[in-house]
Length: 333
Image 1: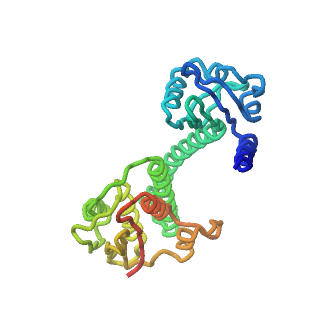
Image 2: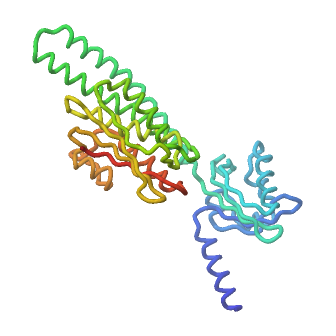
């Protein structure tokens, strides 16, 4: 038994030292964490040699003055026997940096804390966010100009080839505008966190059909859903349904577009929604990209983002729900 204990301690010590994140063991003395032990990463992350700061108050070493009250609350939770997980700012020899902070209590007065530096990742995320917003703004403004000029050419020229060229420009600009809107929607939807709860499926289907009836007056939409069919979802379900209906109608080349929304319980934990239309269908190459995660190349790419959004939202439902989840299917009649 003694040998097993020593082996466990050796494994723990190896893990303790090999982690690239700074790991410290501390003792709460009068509710203040005092450094008992630290791995070598403490020096690389914060600039302190672990041997030189053992016995020092941890908060005085790394907590900025403005963050002492926050640190005090975290230490109080440790003293109460609770774990912590938070984004915190801490002082290093390179200035303040942002960390994912995780701590667990150990025995009566001790605790372990791990500091994972995510400063670079957050900066990259902020930079990308600014880049995306600038690109979307400029794209929207330039597309408005292109659409306006193409429309003006179509309305004023008598030359058939010029009119056809302007119509193609107009259509391409419209498609690009929609793609920009879809990308914006995806960014907002994936950033939102919304709890799922039981929803009667007929209600969001009715709301989405009312919206589609306004934008696609020529389409005939049929609903085949049991009145009390319920799923675990949230407001994102309307986005799923709207994207599927939009795809089924927008790319339908039939003179009389027809779409059927059907739903049925596949088993006690799954509801299948079928959106069926009489159009040309989704190209096989695009189906493979979305359903099989086939690599996107210049010669193999999706035409839009709506079906990606459907996939990602539904996958989220499948991992969250405890009672009927969803799977969505779109196909031809």
